[in-house]
Length: 82
Length: 228
Image 1 (cartoon, rainbow over the protein chains, first blue to last red):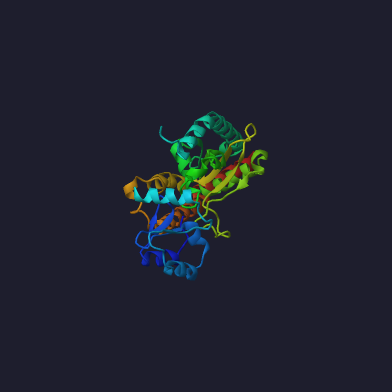
Image 2 (cartoon, chains in turn red, yellow):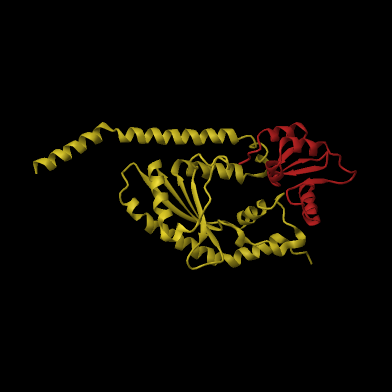
């Protein structure tokens, strides 16, 4: 069960949608992914800072507790674009 | 030739582990039933206690392992690091008891049983950090005597909550793809269901305890004994 409270609202207000399959908040326009573990373990202020960070053109940013490998990033993006 | 995926490898592992999982679930169910015999033998007519074993099906096992990865994906370049042996509940037994006092008794009996005394407690809570609040269900995992490769899970739940989960889990946690997003906001309602079920059982037990007919029957019995 999710216990992210106000963080959920912050993410939804910033255009993120929760993916039950990937257990992550995803914003395709911003090309960013926040894992549920990252959201649970970081403060609302930290979350807002990360939401406001720019994403380099053509790239995706993954906010995970453990930096994802290239394989994980590839597989993640493949699963949300198929 | 098509490349073998992490899922392919895990499906192969699943079927190699299945015979062991079957033996474990049978052994565990027998052990739990044996341990609960004193309680089963003294149940009143309105009380219930069920013991059921189960083994995760292949896709559920893969899904459970996948959900344990951050981002819920396997790294295709490191397929060898994943194993279904890492699951705590490949095989398991669920005990459901009604009313709540029998649930607590069942947990007490099983927790003190030598086989389960060393198992790791992993209680189910409404909110994981609410350590002061009584859990929704008791859960333990560990190894059965004859198998040190696969862990098994023992779950002891109030019957009303357990039956609610059977419907709720298949609707919310294992939904058909088009339902997943729709059910995202059900958390608060689910918590209200838990509260309502708990209230129902508490009130039920309160009324049963003060049953005037039961009190009369006890008095009569006492009188009989005195006359004898």
